[in-house]
Image (cartoon, rainbow, N blue to C red; front, side, top):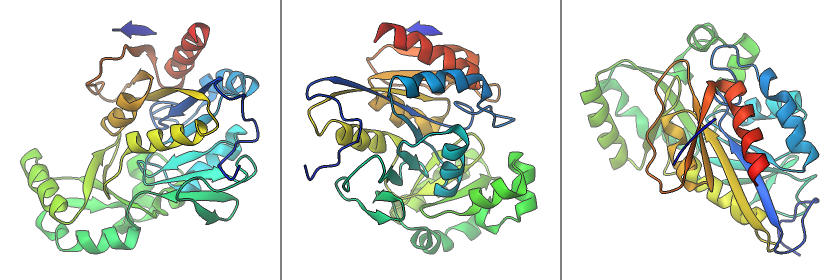
Length: 286
């Protein structure tokens, strides 16, 4: 890696007060998961190391609840995860005895919603869409989603199961995109650019979600230290909010530019291999 300059939510593995608590908050596609194959295999040994050291591995992704549940199960994880670019966070009840601030019961999770609901977004977007060239994920067939993403049908169905955002395949000009964003702002909506889609959502982002999760882990007096890893523009707020920001090189696009006084680590390798090497290097120094 390269270094460029009590009735409170209580995890079952709570540390002693004032003890430092490291958390890892990560983007998925292109970061923990390979951009093309969606495999995390090069990072599995490091994931197991984090588990052994009781360091939470928290997804912070544009993916849906269904996608995160499936991936958590596949990787053998039981930590919180943040979905749809900071729109909602899910805390497993088996790890958190009571609801975090703003949390409500949602099956086996405490759910904290920060964004707008999907139907609300669709209604606000309806009058704007006809003026621009774009394709919404919700208007796409499963076959089209598979073709655009490389996902199989089951995974594409999970990706389409949106609750808090509308991903778009943008097909218009950059100038049109600026006008589109201005029109969205008047409707109380915002956009974030991911690795494949332009995401329309409420006034939230991955950085605000990271800050909220960090506060939950710090409520028992722990000194929480956050490591955040990402590769795209929608990761900027998260990386800038972290104590240790890590940029993972992408085979598909240039790295985003950060505005931070903190030293930024840049991986030498792409995807999960770069993710693993960066985490391993940081763990030696923390």
